[in-house]
Length: 220
Length: 269
Image 1: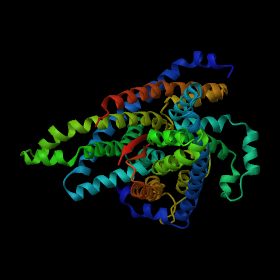
Image 2: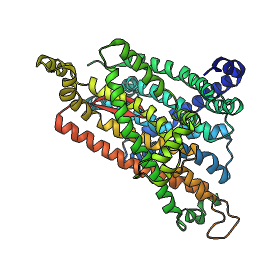
Image 3: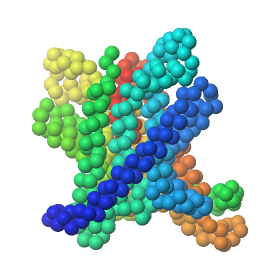
Image 4: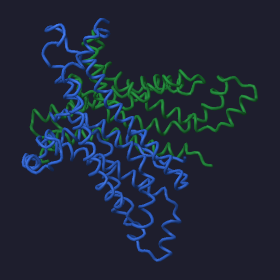
């Protein structure tokens, strides 16, 4: 570890751009995950059995498949099938669709945590399904859903290494560490700084999520 | 679109020994996951006991240790240990690996690097699961044990751990699912397993049907590879749900520890 300082001084610019790519990748994927996740969650709680099954099929298949396999399918697989969607979009679609399964589950369990009596009460007050959802269930579900979604963002930061790594030309911070390592043979130092980069993102996120958990905790 | 629906692409996956080959290589993933899980449970229990230590300094230092490893990408740890682990250690593994492991697991020095990397990461997660399981117990349990004159270790061993451990079974099984998925990443260290087997199947020259010149069905092969993981992990998650229900019936507990993609929470049932 004796070259710890020189490694970062000489390479801080590529480490920084790698870190930015990681953040960008997570940002795009998170947007995809939220949109798809909400759709899938609404399929899972819709009052129609076939829709529930479709939602369940989505969740169970995307959450049990390794992200690496998804990344290969959405990059090399789609490319071979004739769909060239670009590296960043295939990486973020793979990560986004994978995380969407978890988001859908969090939203679903948030909604089902709201007691049945509330739904019955609002229906008996003459609210429609839509009104019940919008004015009674979702505002309450929101509080229970925030902490798990925060945790999923942390998981996404870590998982972004997988999708970027399997698509060789995306230089995220882990790829930067590999480049620096092959250039300088300073393995410990190169990976140490990439680790620091990830911790700079994940540890503050963990602290924020813990705070939110306390804040939104439902006291009964 | 022709490519997607061309049935010969799907037939490729099942042609000859291709499918059996993939299944055999999947065994390597499962073995790797089980070995890592066994080690992580042992290491994780030790770390968890340090984490709930009465010595504040020890507890805080262990907390930092857990948070650091848990918050790094597994892929970074795998690459790091794969590159940085001394060659002697890798040779030591090749020479001394237990005989019951599959040949490809015994034969590659990178396997020990990946076991270390996966264990470092997973033992931190397991330690958090243990801690959540132990701390979900009512305080009265520990206090009652102390009042009955049991010392710290005895109350741990006889009162706290048996109850805490049962509560963490569902979370441990779902961590095993995450771990099984993570074993696909060891392909980056050139260890023979299911994902690398997929690329071998793709590299088989020429299609067994129309001869040469047919592009390898990358998409179809990896859909089948993914399906294998899904079937195995679904079986595990069914098991986890069973255990949860049984635990609830047997103990009348109100809380269980659940894990979701490496995140642990105590949920009321």
